[in-house]
Image 1 (cartoon, one colour):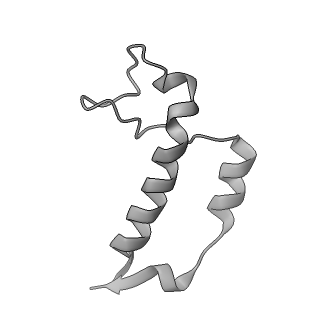
Image 2 (image 1 turned 30 degrees about the horizontal axis):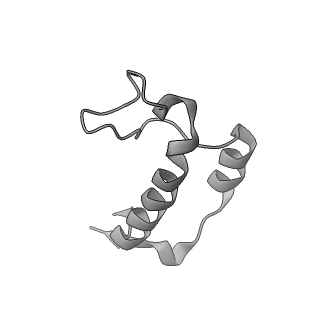
Length: 68
């Protein structure tokens, strides 16, 4: 058994990150190895390391489901 994040939660998180990405230097129109073929940055966090660390500390059990 393991925990799997609910798809709706993952989608909401990704949408929020992608809304912030246009303001990042890595998505400013230049070629970057961080960008996928469709121009999306799925590699970097669009914020400060401290923000990422704080977010990584939060765990909401309702966002996950047990998968066998």
